Length: 353
Image (cartoon, rainbow, N blue to C red; front, side, top):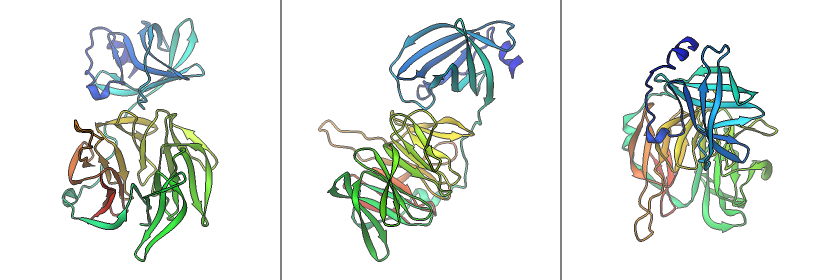
C-alpha cells in the first residue's frame, strides 16, 4: 500500500466524496485534507503535505483553520500527540490512518489499515417489508426489547425524571418506580434507562442502580454489550466504567455480536466495523437492531409550515442500503425474531407481525 500511496502523489485523481460523506479525509496530489479534527474542546480543519521520499512517511502541516464541530463519528482526533483519522479516501479505497506529532509541524505515519467495504450483511425476509401492524393497549414514548423477548416501555404519564416505566407481559403491565426518557433491555430482561437529567440506571433485583456517566440513549446487544450515546462520545460499558469510542450521538442500538449502530447529532447513521466507524447512506431519527441482526431506522423529524410534524417513514437495512417498510413511527425497537415494535406521533404502540 505504501508504494502505491507514494505513486499517487503526482496527478492521481481520487473518487470525490458525496455530500453525506463530507467529513471523510481525502488524499489528492500529495495533499491530505482533513475537514474536521477534534482536539479537546476545539475543532479545526487541516491540510498536510507529503514529504517526498520520506521513510517512514512524513507529512507537514501546511494549513489549519477553526471550524464548528459537527459531532461526526468520522471526524479525526488529536490527543497526546497522536492524530487518528478514522476514514480517508485514497485512490478509490478507504483507510484509517494514525500519525505521531514529531515536532516542527511534522507528523509521521505510524499505523494504517484498509476499511471493509460493507458494514454488515444478513438474510433479508422480503415479507417483513409489508408487515401487519398490531396495536397494543396503552400509550408509550419509547420501547426496549431484550434478546429473551422481554418488553419494557416508557409511558406517557409524567414522573420525576421523565415518564412512567412499564414491563409488558401476557398478563398485563408491571410498573417500575421512577421515570425515564429512553430504555433498552439486557438479555436477562433487565432494563437500562436514561432519564431527563441524562442519568443512567439499570434494574437490579427490583431496584434502580445508578451507573456512572451521562447519556442521551442506551442500547444493548444480544451478547450483553451495553453502549450509550452522548454529546461527549459513544461509550461501551466494561463492567466498571465506560470506554470512549469517540464522536457523539443521539440514538444507539446494538447488534447481536456487540456491534453498535448510531444516529449522530446531525442524523447521519454510523456503525462500528473492526474498531472503526463507517457511515451508512441516509439519515435517521431513531434506530433499532434485533437479536437476529435486523436493523431498522425511522426517518428524521420534518415539520409542516404550521409547525405540525410529518409522518416519519420506517426503513430496513438490506446490507447495502435501506428498503422502506410499510408504516410510520417515531421510536423503534426490534424483537429477537427481527420484528419491529414502534411508537408513533400519537404515542400509540404497535408491533409488526
